[in-house]
Amino acid sequence: MYKLFLFFSIALISCSHPHYKNPHVLIETNYGDIEVELFPDKAPKTVGVFLSYIDSGYYNKSSFYRVVKTEDMGGNNYGLIQGGTWHTNPQLQLPGIVHESTKQTGLSHSSGTISLARTTPGSANTEFFICIGDQTQFDYGNGGNSDGQGFAAFGTVLKGMDVVRQIQNAPANGESFTEKINIDKIKRL
Image (cartoon, rainbow, N blue to C red; front, side, top):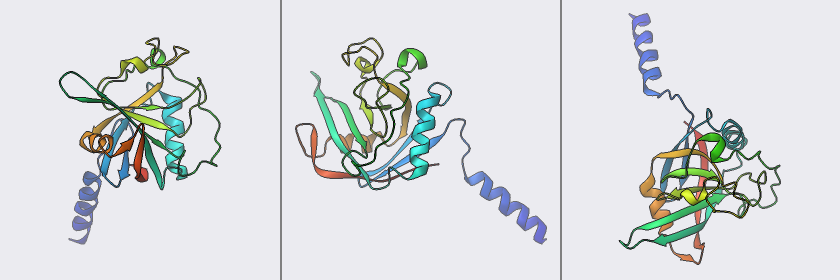
């Protein structure tokens, strides 16, 4: 009887933890949680480094600090929210990540896409943004930056776009939030 109970208990526990083809991470914020699926088959270097930053705890007590809002003719907000360690741990100096453009990965900056922020190709590290509405100007060759290389998309929001929009609508002064938007931590699921 005990062995049967133990077998069913183990089976129940293993069934309660979902198994994903691709890695999933949870961004825990003071506005709620955002679940993101990452695409290592398409952007292996970007995903690998992002996961190593999560495992190292770099995103613990970090923040969303930048917002871009664009309103269309129907009054819909588009844009992005950007976060990472820049405001909370500016002394963290990490090497740049090899740039994986959307031309290489086949990904696009559609609504919910998570992508690395950068200045020049290969300069991205802990800073990332989430697209609100389609932002294909950030794809390779579409003019979203002066070098034409675009940004490195590497995943998409599966749950929590309502949280992303709440964060986007938080009070801001220009492109900076007026109050800190906490990222308590980012963890693997």
